[in-house]
Image 1 (cartoon, rainbow, N blue to C red):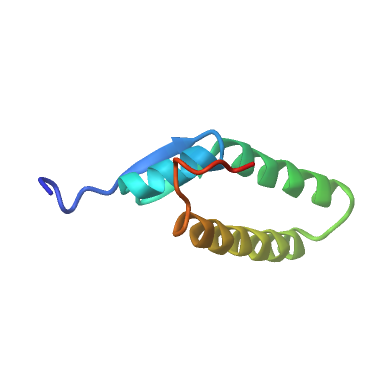
Image 2: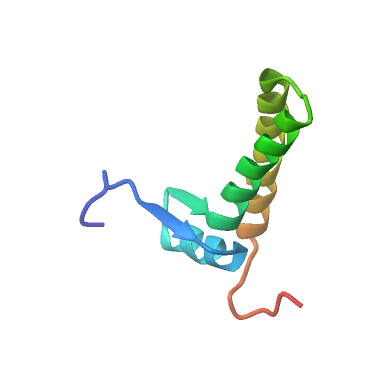
Length: 84
């Protein structure tokens, strides 16, 4: 590796791109649909009267769960195997 200290941040549209970037060595992957959906959820929950601190706790739990499951799937994902 020519730049071992290089930290790679990449953007993905969907999970297939996430898995490809994971295998390519990206350190942080920003998922467009996921991140905008989490932000929209925050707005909706707060508009419905949920306290911002409670919203933050729930979203953090959801994000952590999603990150763990995405990493678990990525560890066995194969590009040449159909997802359907």
